[in-house]
Image 1 (cartoon, one colour):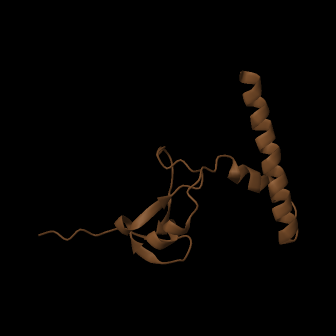
Image 2: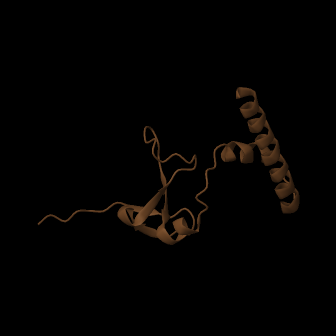
Length: 99
């Protein structure tokens, strides 16, 4: 009988080392189904359950755009909400023009 060596991965949230089958794939861009030329990160099952599983298209770009200057947390959150509202308005405007 051959012993199969299982790949180990590290949870990016808590740092736990676990076997690959016991982990969940995490794709920072939100599209884990597109697998070409990607390197996935991993989460343990408890950390994966704590994630928000809502769509996050454009979130990474928005956060990078906002990252330009260091501001207190309350100002960052305020700017984030403003940016999300602006993005929603732009999206709604595009949809309105298509009708």
